[in-house]
Image 1 (spheres, helix red, strand yellow):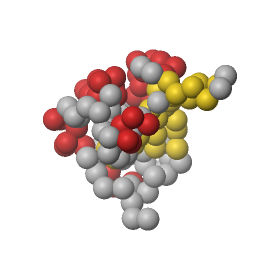
Image 2: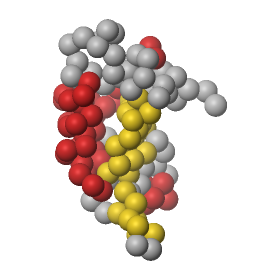
Image 3: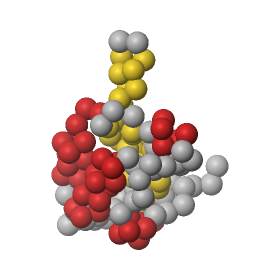
Image 4: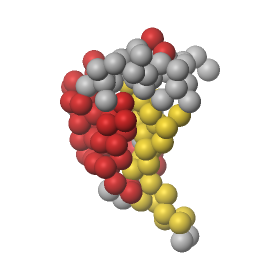
Length: 125
């Protein structure tokens, strides 16, 4: 993966935001999901070039677990927009996100067809 050079500091090209607040990441709501494992899998698989951050509530609780895949600068220039995904509860969905980001992500590569099943609308502005 590539990074953007801002002088001596290099910023990740992509960023994935993973909701982990009231419903997302809740073992009460989703007891059979390894929430910590999901986050670790993303971070381990994507390394230092993809920033995976944890967010407070993204206001899509009915579709927990929610994550947002932001395009790289090149993806934005190509028309890519943040991709909101909900009900991301199984390891295969995480693997599909990883494969998509490695291929270029929003604006650069088409997402795996299975991710269409997880697409949700962002909350109203």
